[in-house]
Length: 307
Image (cartoon, rainbow, N blue to C red):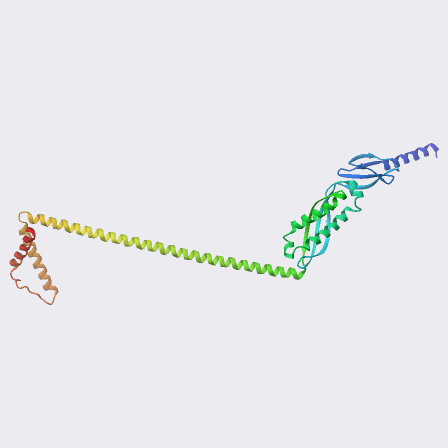
């Protein structure tokens, strides 16, 4: 083989090795920590970079995007001595790559362990019934505890979420029985309230019905009384008008003769009706002298007229 060709090949291999060792491409939202001879040199951002071969090296690679770390389920004891299984999630982000590289060995493991410790402390200060209601408060306490410790780690804890709280089976059965009793209680209360309202509505309806009936009866009696009063007035007015007309006729020529004839006719008619309808016959002493009776009646009319 030609020595010059061998030399070219060796040179090309060296160039490739140098390029591999020196050329670094950092993706977007990533940072690389460069060490020179084992000592921190600089932090590389996104883009193309050239390193010194065999002197500089990429010691750490960090992603600056938000990360999700699962917190394994752990046993916690509540304030009322009930054992529960709790797991959760933490959302964190690298803020300073240098601190993340040299401030802690593994920020993910450290954050998860600190979250578990803080969670056990929070659960131990509240009763079982409150654990389901105080999730937001628990999340806030865990975030505060980790965020304070993580300042020297170069990371930022964005939020913490309790995924699930699982009480023992016996406690679950007791809680289910309690919920069943509570639902039955609410159902009974709702039923009694419905019956109460129904009774009130019926009583109110009966009261309104009685009021309307009494108002109607009152109006009916008023109407009847007004009708009777109007009838009495009409009869009285008609009687007065009749009497007035009779008096006027008696004053006219021939009025008394007509009155004599009318009295005689009524006397005979009524006497005949009495004799026809009754078994007992009352005979006046002057029954045969109709003219005498008429004369007495007319004398009375003359006396009243003079009065």
